[in-house]
Image 1 (cartoon, helix red, strand yellow):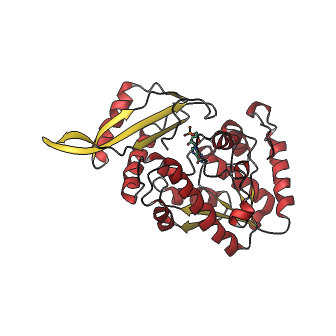
Image 2 (cartoon, rainbow, N blue to C red):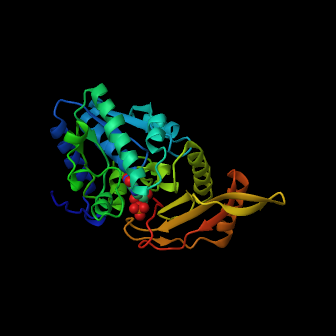
Length: 322
Ligand code: XMP
């Protein structure tokens, strides 16, 4: 297993990196085709731009609508990339993902279900359909570190776990960003011409909102955490935190609604200050902001009677709940 040498954001020669990676992708793919799945996050958006620079029309970009993304995500991503001249095809895979997640409560099994559905089911089909031999993806060094350390099985790490994607899924994987961390990727993203709304966008995990539902992931629970996420993203839009999120707990608690007992849902809010996601501290949000968030959650998200704020640091916490 090759050791990956880190390229620190401060040492990065952005133009050289873009030229080098585009040339490497072009050389590897040769005259053939490659596919990539754009999630709208900064990593996959950057890979999309590098891939298009290298391959033009020979890169087929897909957005996998897995049913566990944030509100209006497919529409928004297609429109951003249309403006950049990149065609994105939306693939409806909702039933595949919910089918794979049904009945699973263990966090690592949930991650594995998402991974297998992406790579064995959805991407393998798309590779066949498009005649591609390669999948381009935005794995970064932090994803590799945490997976290898056994902390979390990040959805996009294979080789470092001794898994050969060609053998396991029938195609090869190209990872142009694997030497970088998030701060380095943002620099490349900006230089690739991506808008601020993308290069400055906060990270979002591959297992998407499934990483934020404790216990079994169902369409109903995803809808709840999606509504809570929408509120947090609206309320905290102006702040400079690294990442913020809503988590839906599995346990219910007793509350009161309309003067009656209401055994309801708990939402946990997390908001992190971090440079590269390896270490993080809870952001010192003003109490009024937290109160606003709690008021909106109980008023707008059906069934919620309790809202908490996580004040732990990473480690021992991790940023996502799953
Ligand atoms: P954790 O929860 O591990 O998160 O402290 C650190 C950063 O990584 C993101 N994250 C993921 N990103 N695939 C990804 O591409 C994944 O499986 C994954 N899991 C967590 C998380 O959102 C945070 O920014």
